[in-house]
Image (cartoon, rainbow, N blue to C red; front, top):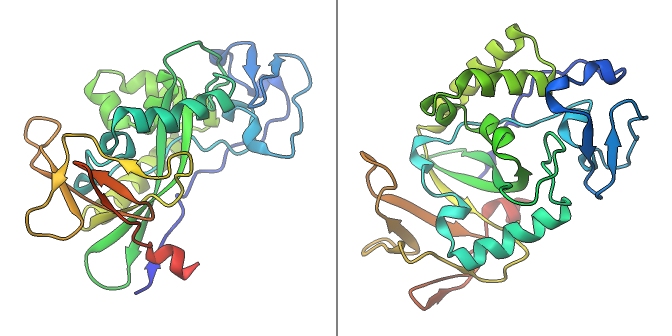
Length: 263
């Protein structure tokens, strides 16, 4: 069966022509991916890899994304894995990023978050989509909230989070309103599907060890389940593609993702 993915439609950011285009909210010192620091007023380096620049210095920053479908709540990589495995994935990424936020370029000794970027591939037929892990970004707490607007709203942080999002991307209010509209429309579409996790991208851990909260489904092959994480959430369900995994000392081989086969 074929699957279809529509890239997230980021609004166009105005070009950076000088330091006046970089909002003062983000300070005067910006750490690059290789550890070098650019100070406000210096020449902004033109790097071969735009990703080596913090997002605030990029011509096309992309530090927001799809809302997580309700049917996928509580099945992130961080929620699935035992702490040892999750640390083995996120800690090297933090070091590779020189202990700095990939969005704003702020360096900090601790407290950086690893945020998972997912692609939602819709099936040609049926109601089971593939949720593919595409990237993991290293972010400070404030920039991490830009990916979790619903949570920011629950925490009473909506205004400051939206303000940060607009300043970093150099968006107008109209651009943000349009952004909010298509984000909600995509979420409503994704909510109609259940999701199978494609974790093929994970390289730093050969075999995934699942957290003890997960157990095998008593009837469905290769399906795992766990209690809800918050009040009102029912049982969580997940299935894993692309990596071997272990649950309660029982090992399962990697089951290939249809997306890999198609590639």
